[in-house]
Length: 540
Ligand code: GLN
Image (tube, rainbow, N blue to C red; front, side, top):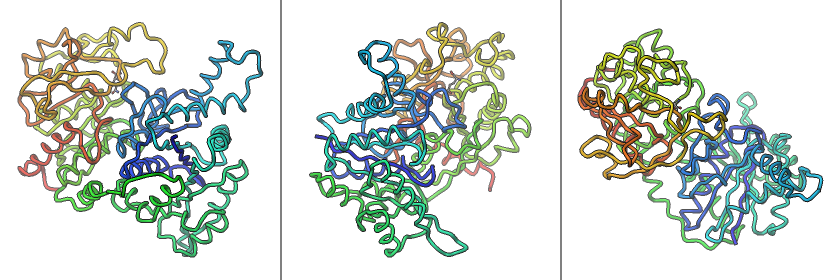
């Protein structure tokens, strides 16, 4: 029977619950256990797919096409746990299912209520992951204890523990222990209050993980233990990371979390082996070189809008023992201030995915700069579509080239709505989503990077390369180097006459791991390092 770990958060949001869950998953996997991870999000959207990146950061896409919270990206980067649509439930998704059942007559005349019907639906979502081949299910409850929205989820996990046996469940509460500089003191009161709020709804945490700017001395940890009714050894410090998020599991193990988890859940495990992970962290802490990569996008002010892209750039850096310095460039500013002013001195340019018209011309200008100045370029999804538009306008002489997303009556619609999208009217979950196979053309950059002919990558788009223009592009040197296996959808294009200019319709950033950089990111950074090494990049 699978054991359960529930992780709640207290005091403030953005404490890194997702990272902590991912780290716990990674530690348990390294002890030979089979883990699954899932997140409950208390908002009413059915999934984050319809939300602006300004609201919740990046939308993370799974193999099965689910559009999920970005914390699932941490789960995949830290563990090997397979993720599916059952790994992210929002309040909206739970209610949608309850209301559908009510319409179908499932409740046989009963009054449908939050307790028990909504809480039952939540519990069913937890049980769905606890299959026979799983040792531990880690469930993250989004939001902060004390929020009205989180209450049904907290009530559901309280009931769940009662049903499967308290000994089979572990409650971890992540809290903040602020350091007041003026007083020179750590403050434990907010944590006491937050645990108090949890206890009021019947949940006594077993472990407290305390986020803090500074180290928490033993006497302060003892005080927290006493007031929060938690074992002294179970008050674990999680200090702000110095270099990288990938240090978190090592720090949690150092503070004893690993043994407590195993003991409290009576898990049969192997000894912990963190050698590969520690080697990776060493590469992060001691890089041998630096490269500067400009990311030209439109949600640059939100830290998490392109989360997986930034992570994948880092991973590629780890592979080369290089620190990747990201220069965040607002696409609109490229139009107003010019590409030279914003891009001179970078070793590579990346244009990520996106939607809508704003910033498009700036992205196109940045791509032109990369093409003409032979700066390594990597385009992702909208980034590929912009590369195609740029080439059509500048090289094929099609001045009116555009995507029908931005100009439905474009003279030369080189990017156009996919046939299957033409009938779609609903917004949520209706794009071309999830994993699709792709065949790679021999002897091109893409094939060399992957080292194989057939790959699968994740997608999230409505528009595509328009095959009417395919021959013209090829004849002028923008080569389709990866297509759907039947050859109809162009998935990758690359420039023949350029050190490294490659753009993809899919999202490779969802398949990169810190210990295994994605091959395209890895080779993009290699090209950037080569450019820097050749002295072609202006001195800083
Ligand atoms: N807006 C474009 C499309 O729908 C690109 C999407 C993306 O970059 N994810 O095709």
